[in-house]
Image (cartoon, rainbow, N blue to C red):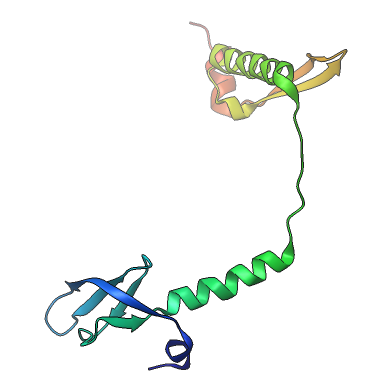
Length: 136
């Protein structure tokens, strides 16, 4: 038994599952807290120490001490609709040239509350150039 298990809170065993093949058997003890303890033998008592409860409690204390700033950011429904429109333009251009959407670069500018496409760059591979320039 490790030092961690000595300090861990004791939890009631809900069920025990046998996992593994001969010579490599592990007994998974499902505890009332929801954690699972793995042991080489079945526990003889109805309560065993839950090291995971100890680990999560110490980790929660660390996380709480960091503190998280609350950010209230709402860009509104209009900007979301504009971004969807821009992505549809990107998808249309990608489909017309037969390239992935990652190959289409749009330069967008905010003009009086709406997004406007200023220019576009389409990256073509050598096979794309050959495909587009070859006579049909």
